[in-house]
Length: 529
Image 1: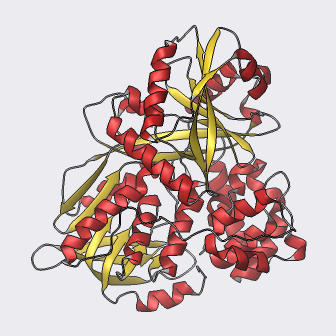
Image 2 (image 1 turned 90 degrees about the vertical axis):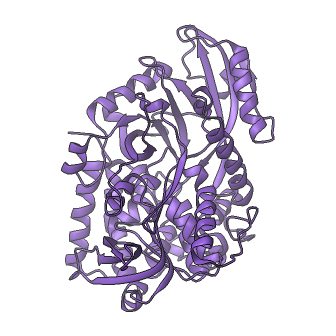
């Protein structure tokens, strides 16, 4: 279990030698962390910011095969992704859930029905299922009467899966710790250490917390793994001058469900450039995304986090209003936004949307780097790293391709909650579900207004999930910053009471954290100035 007292205890013992040291607390690092700990290795994971701070809390919220990758000829990526999607649906069914997509076809950008049938057939074949088909106009009307009918020729349906991406990361981290690993957020790798042969043998870590005097530690490890996603090259420059990552930015906008109600997800073609986009229901809001553009170095130098530009906002609004013209959506209807950076392997492909989503595994002067890929394929990427770790350690590890990804979800029958609520908590808390239920206070046994998030989830996260800052809690643990107008600040007083009780924040610390959170939300999770 993640508790705040760990930080001081771990920092006191962190400079002991480790078998595997993982740099990066996104989904790739988290999945590897759990797998290495499960293999019996002494494993440490360090993350410069918060767990899932980067791409892994800013994805399109999908575990999917990538239907558009078929069009681009990326058959291996699609095959791997679909197979991993099926594993996650089977092994963590309450966190990764099936999602029906509607794929409408219009005269303006007509694709023959047989081509769509063929693509969806291949997509389903990869997943060893048959869950696609054609919809009649009447069926489509029943599913969602608000879709634009002008020029509509026909529609298809198919299935992918929905996820809370940050919770998927936390589930891996939590179980890795239960298996004996140590994970630290706000622990920044300052530089790599090398031995007299020029091989990477450890790192220098700085505690990245503005509230304390920085601690610096030298940490040695038999194997050091770079799993920093879009920031892969920042670390690799210490062992190799060749850059391999192209940073692409994907931005999304969110609307309250009552302002933009949809009953299922839609895979749409943007009317301006014919790119694939999604409109989907997630956690009580409607998400529209994603853009796919190169992230300029100038923006990264000027800002600590990626953010949506005005051009991206307008681009997404054009698509939303084209397909759902009845709603007449505008900027004032957007309750939040988020932008993530994708680590795309460099290639000769000029069009960002056609760039490969394959992953790469490198070993350079002792540093193992795993990069590229996508959230859906994180387990396969971790498995490939562990095979290399096994060779490096010259030690036979218990690596089983078909081993389950997670501990089984706890099965609890509790008449006080609906099956939907219990399933939600089962996916998020896994085998801690019973402990969570026993911790619920009577006055917190209710949802935060306008969301499906219970007040008891906020207290649990503050107490058990390594929250260092308020944005950790509201943007990545319970996601209120994405689900409510103004980042949920209207509930600040009740949140203050919980954080002061659980995190021992005095009034000055609370005011610092609230000011920090408001600034982060306004600059990176709302609309561009």
